[in-house]
Every structure is written in C-alpha cells, then in structure tokens.
Length: 112
Length: 111
Image (cartoon, rainbow over all chains, first blue to last red; front, side, top):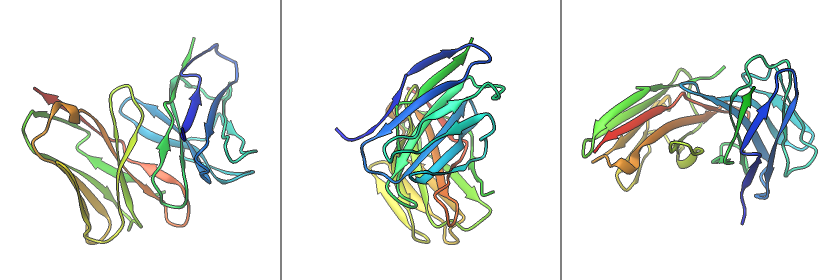
C-alpha cells in the first residue's frame, strides 16, 4: 500500500535530550513537510523540502533540524534547544506545487 | 508571511442544522485546500479550489472560492454527528511549496 508512515506513534523524551522523528513515504512525492500541532494553534509549519538535499525553514524552525538525503525520507530532530517540545508532530507529502497533502498518523512527543 | 484566517474557531450545532465557516486571506491565493481532522486523527484532504468563484460539492458539503480569490467558505447542510472534527483551510504561498494552514474550525454536534 502506498502511503506516508511516521514512527513512533508515541515518544517520551527527557529534558536536554535530542530525539529524531521518522517520516517515510512511498508515494514518489517531491515535497515533504513537518508541522507541529498544539491545542487551539492549528498546524504550524516547521520545515519543508521540495527536492532531495534541499529544505527550507517554516514559521517555527528554531530548535528543530531536518535532512532530506533520500526522496522517501524526511526525518525531524527535536533538539534540546526547543524550549517547549511537547506536541503532536505531523509529517506530510505532496506530489507537486499546490497539490493535496497526504499526512502521516503523527507522533505525539512528551517531555518528561 | 501569508496567513489564512479561519472564523469561527469553534462551532457547536444541533444535529440537522446548517452552518458555514470561512477562510480569509489578505493576499490573492492561487488555490485553496480544505482538510478535515477527526478527533485523535490526522488531517485528511477534502477538496481543492482553483478558479475564481468556483463552487464544488461533496454530498452535504459545499465549498466556494471567492471572486477575488482571497476567501473561501465551507457550508455543511443538515449536520450529522459524523461531521464532528476540525476543519482546516490551507494555501500555498505564491512561488513556493510552503503550504500554510489556518488555525482550524472545531465542530461539535449535539445529537
């Protein structure tokens, strides 16, 4: 089945630790996105990538890093510099400019 | 940067009622998309509008793109409990693939 997969579904992190969220798609999409969702805040764009080895900051990139070494993969690292990392993280992909976005199931990150 | 504003942020209706929610932008949009997120789920694409004044229907849902391509509306007829969730509008910033979402409109339905 084609789709976009995020793992893990739930993640717990101690303060001061970096953690990497996985996002893989087999839809052959060029564009990939990472969003953060907090209650009442909607979806806020963290990073996005249009092609391999290229990515751009979104509106809330501070404290996060990404890589795009393969077309299928767009992992997000939440660093210790992110002051309030507890949130629901959503990865998405789309085939081209202005096309519909397909979302993964999301990763719920909790800092303990 | 470009923003899309959704109103209202919350909507509570009685089952069977009609209602409309809106998405507004200060800039002209090339297109607009609508998504639905069920409680505990992830956003799912509903529709994309591209042309000025375009109207599209999906069963009880009617989507419209404004003549100036700066606003859009979603009208739901005879609301059902299955309509519960958060509805987002989204638009791509011109010249890039930066897909920006509104804050969403959370719908609850009283059976």
